[in-house]
Image 1 (spheres, rainbow, N blue to C red):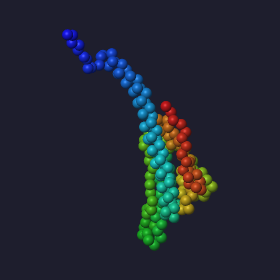
Image 2: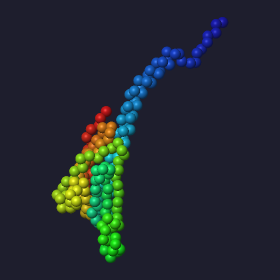
Image 3: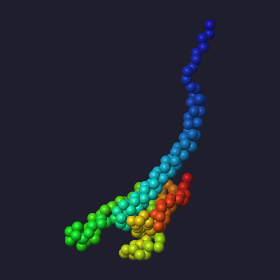
Image 4: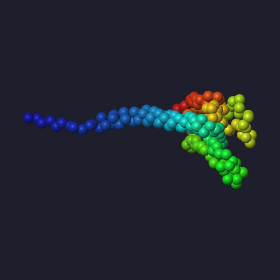
Length: 184
């Protein structure tokens, strides 16, 4: 009787074919996953931008006062603030004489990660010239107590090439985000 030996393993050629197939798949899947992850990260940051402006508008309505959103070009951040509404009798004289030391009812900062850029900030609308301070009307946006605002348009971009235009429409304070391009 002849006894045959049954092999339970893979041959060398089968293993090489499997490794080649895995290498080909990884060259397709890894870049696609990376692009998907980058796109999701970019959309998350855009949601933060949209939420920041929506919160500033909501606070203006809640406080019954203007919320000022100032863009700082050096740090590439937006800072929203609204002074506390106190009468001069409620504030000590030394504090009331210095406007920078008045109590703040609301303050928030929007800073994006280092590989993001905020560019071409343009404030527009009929009332922009009326509240220009220190000749910086181009970097200050106001949300008003009635829910309206000045208009603003800026570009948010990422080092990977993704970019979007953020527009805040005057009067309605609606935030629109429109993708510009995605490299890759």
